[in-house]
Amino acid sequence: MQCEQCKNTVSTPVEPLLSLQEALNFLRSPNPLTTTQKNDISSFLSFSQTGQDKIDLQILRFESFVQHLRSRKESLKRCDEALRSLFAPIRNLPTEILVLIFSFFVTEESTFSNVSWKNPLIALPRYLQQSGNHPLDFEFSANSNTFLSHHLIRAINSLLDNASRWRSVTVENFFPRLQSRPPEPLPLLRRFERKYGDLGGHPADRVFLVPNAPRLVHLGLHTFDPLQDIFPWTQIQTLDLTWKGQQSRNIFDLLSPTHSQNLSSLTTLSFFIRAHEPCPHDSYPSPTVTSLTFDGTLLHGLISKLYLPALKSFTYQCGTYSPFPHPDLGLASDSDETTARNNYPAQLTYPIFSQFITNSQCTLTSLTLSWIRISESDLLKILTTTPTIEEFIYLSEPPPQNANYILLSPNFIKTLRGNNLSDSTYASSFFPFHPILPRLVKLNLQLDERSFREEDFVEMVLSRWVPIEYRGVRPKEFGTVGETGNHSLTMATTSISLTRVQLTVLGRLLDEEALEPLMKLRRLGLSLDMEGLDCY
Image 1 (cartoon, rainbow, N blue to C red):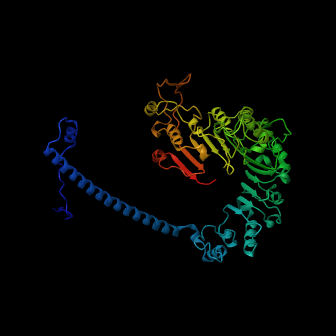
Image 2: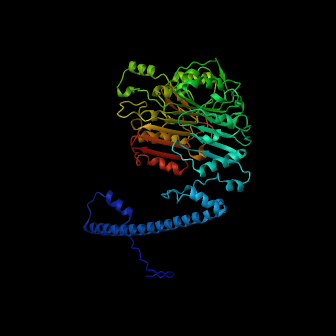
Image 3: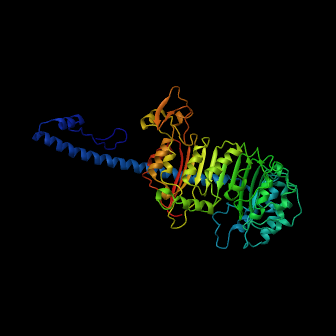
């Protein structure tokens, strides 16, 4: 038999000898099978197996065809990208400029011969002339082994000649040419950041910034002693500072109202500083600061002095380990933990955090705890007392080699479960009750392998997921829906769902099969990034 249109051979389907209902009747019948029935069943089983084999073959053919189509699509996409690059603006540059760029970046081993477009040398005089008066964003980077060839010196001088066009500048390490030029106006400069490997100061900061940058609002420095008295701090909105211990008092002065009138974001990192550095003033009111990043070594000296009513985002980070054995492991007594707290006073504790929130009178929406030393009980208290948090980031530092302790137990994930309702109630309502962080939308966790179990993580994420069509909906009549201990669970808030989840597990790879339920949420709109590292 052939198809009338394509003339291909078409196999005639054979009707099954038995229906499903007949098979069920055989199973329910109390009588033994007759010889005829046995023959019919054997024939059907043979027919069924042959039919399944044919179907499997057709599925393989379809899958092969789909794979072929996908391969063709990828080939077309690659060709499309290659052709679109012909319209890139950089191809409008004169040939002699491109030759100079390529000859500058291609090394003797031709390391960059295939990526010559990646870092074009925009400092060439001809290019700067042809780019008109457009603002310049660039970065100086060098190390002690950098050879100052005539090409590099020429490029630096070209940029210095166009200082009036600078908009964003980052200077890493040491550039002696920067301090040899006289001050020039910087009318467009909005961001300046100086980085040093040795955390040293440099008089070039004074040359470039004082007082020639009236629009400067973002400043990053490793020292500010030379600038403290003469720099117009009141115009700075974003300030990133890293300093040595002997400069610690400068940050206290900088937080005074006379210097921080317009400051909205402050990042401070300190090195070689005593944890209990005394503060010279009784109060540091900064009513405009909305984002604060602190190093743990400064927190003790400043915690009782800050007043930040507008603060929304708080980041606390510290890179030194404090050996707190977890009580569930039975590795240490309470006295051992007390000793550890005394030996490492820069750790974050709940009383310190509570005092900070109380004194600042702020309402946090974002909390980041990065490489910190904090016990699980203190962390849970912090999360419980900050119900307005919408974004929570916890990055646990890798434990020392052969460490026999953890800071968080595997039960920590369970405490973040989004509701205390039964599964059936939750599935029918999509209005979960959140005992901790009820407004959580973004979650980023980096945990040690001993603090993580896939099944608990999956359960936690599922319990905080609400379909898009139910988000922001307030139930008209919901009332009391359950009991937890002596407290009734009453749904009185709008439904809030996780929208972004990031997870990193240190010490082992993830069990992808156990995390498969979360892949479905990714297809439904959840932004999900998960990885396991088999090393620390």
